[in-house]
Image 1 (spheres, rainbow, N blue to C red):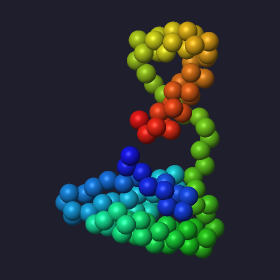
Image 2 (cartoon, rainbow, N blue to C red):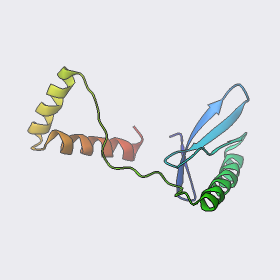
Image 3 (cartoon, helix red, strand yellow):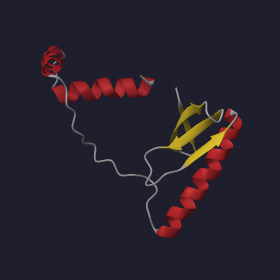
Image 4 (cartoon, one colour):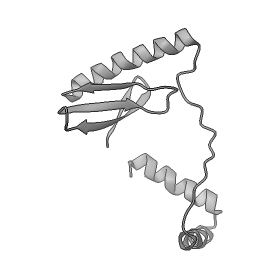
Length: 112
């Protein structure tokens, strides 16, 4: 998985070959906060520094650090997939929404 949790905040980790460093970017926050390092240990340290600076800015500006998620989003799928989802959901005795939420929860828990 390319995720790192730093003090309760999630970051996505990637490798930037142009600068030969790892890059971390916090997600689900009200602003941008990224960090770079050559090793995983240093990446965590830099992430803590970046996060603390971000949290201090939020406190100074009176902004909540975390984004609010409503729990709703639109998803467009091809009609044939929609039909297969409806069929599979019915076969499991669930609504499409309930069945897709179950599938997404399972995938998110396992990093798929």
